[in-house]
Length: 265
Image (cartoon, rainbow, N blue to C red; front, side, top):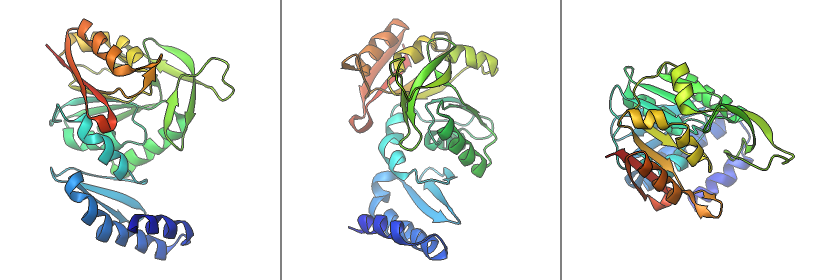
């Protein structure tokens, strides 16, 4: 009831000091009290941006609300691996930075996060959130990930935050540069990788085809969103088979945001 009231009031209260005060009170007095135990983080609204504070001491800010996405997927991505100081993390499909910013805070100044986001509109929002946090250990890349370097046509929605491969003749398709992860990491002079998080809207198999050298050369832990349907079936099944051929164990879990986990045998 209170959440619906918040939506209604947020829509009709004009921008200004009253609305800012209302949003600050809503998150401090209601949202945290209702959701904190299940989330293990608190969210505050101050001076035009959101602030997130986690049990483990991680903190970061964003211009846009990320609480729902953090609640839905963060625990799932990290169910099999705990980020450590100094880790190198690849965020494939970074969107506006919810996982990117968490990972950057977790790995600290000696670690590094490479964040890929192909949608130009979303990429701008990602950069704004990185700048807000003053995060110097994040490299943001405005490219998609694929099995090879190329330019492909994508249809996307910068508001809802999804992009996917359409037919070549889709009228709304936008030409988008894509790269293989192996090639781009060489260009960025990135060495060993510790963790890969991916949510690439049905391009999971192409992603790992282009990351074979990275996956086979090291002992990478991966968490890949696999709830997408490709050729009539969930991508998790094909992912598990492809990862097995590369010498990885894998399993799929976290039904709220289906994720396939992989680790070296």
